[in-house]
Image: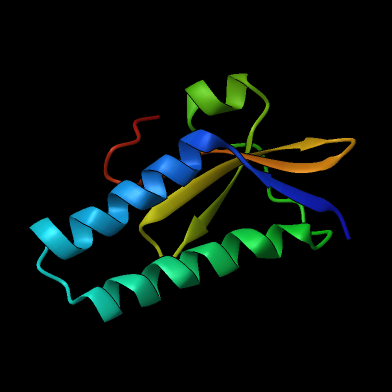
Length: 98
């Protein structure tokens, strides 16, 4: 197993998503928290020795990031380093442009 390090950027975006789900999207606190918890569990699963391909999105690919999709809507960009995995960014699929 390898260590999983989550960047402050990803932590901030997940917290903002939680606020969006409850305030703007009018999702109940319980439902929003359940979704965020599934997202966090997904990120923690990066400690497994599974390696996804390089991102198809130019900005992340040029940085050498690998990408994986969460629930068909969210893409996580991560980097493999000797210490483990650093989760660098997250974006909704509708926002990213090749």
